[in-house]
Length: 129
Image 1: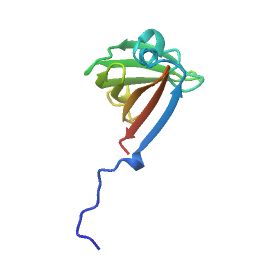
Image 2: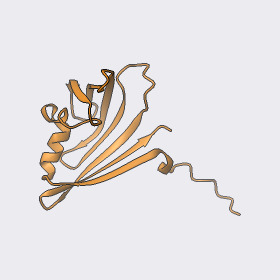
Image 3: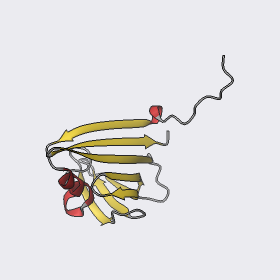
Image 4: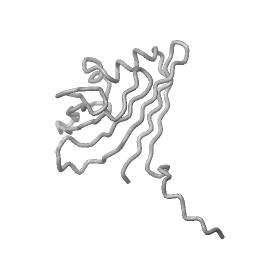
């Protein structure tokens, strides 16, 4: 038996980590994530469309958008950028677009690693619970 306090700092039970190797150069992948004319073409679940209200990719900036579900339901969203290191890293918090929205809140770190002419993209999302 030990007198040490348990480590409550682990997020393993509240995080999702996804890694993919994309057949595109890092700069292009980063642009697809950070430029309004590109992000709406791929972001969100299959069958959903995106309408961007505003996008300001810088620390303290926000991306406000609506995900339109295939059933016609609209889901307002807000991403607040905490860290932007071109073209290698984005850190952001995501929550619903309304002030009293009860949707899940989470923080994501996206890293973009050059692998020859490909990009290794890792997303680490940590949820409140």
